[in-house]
Image 1 (spheres, rainbow, N blue to C red):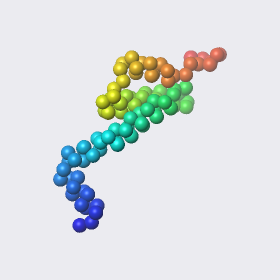
Image 2: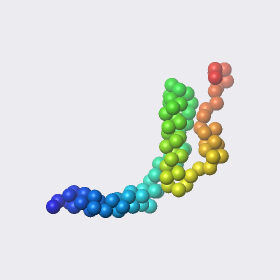
Image 3: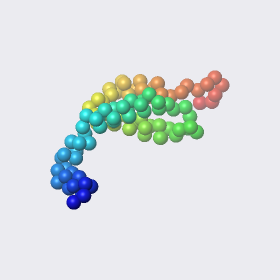
Image 4: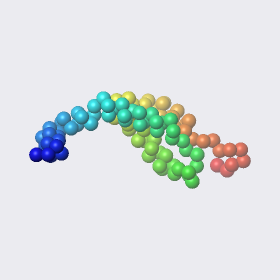
Amino acid sequence: MDQDAREEAKWSSQPESACAHYQGAGNTTRRIAEATRLRETLHYKNERLLSFGTFLSKIQHIFNLFEEEDEPLTELAKFRFLDGKRSEPSVGEQH
């Protein structure tokens, strides 16, 4: 039996081990880092650069990552996050 077959047999015979493996501390750290990076870099300026639907999907992904890792944002924190991520129109720019 080759290495890949042994690994597959190990995980398929112990599905709870696979779950625990993918929910480990290292994976948690990676997911929190991903959510934090997205939270810091995501901004909405206009529909041409990023559709509002895509922007909202990315925000929901951020919220879900924090929620899944037991670090949910409060509703007030979500509101402040959303309010700070939109660009104000420039002087003379139409709304």
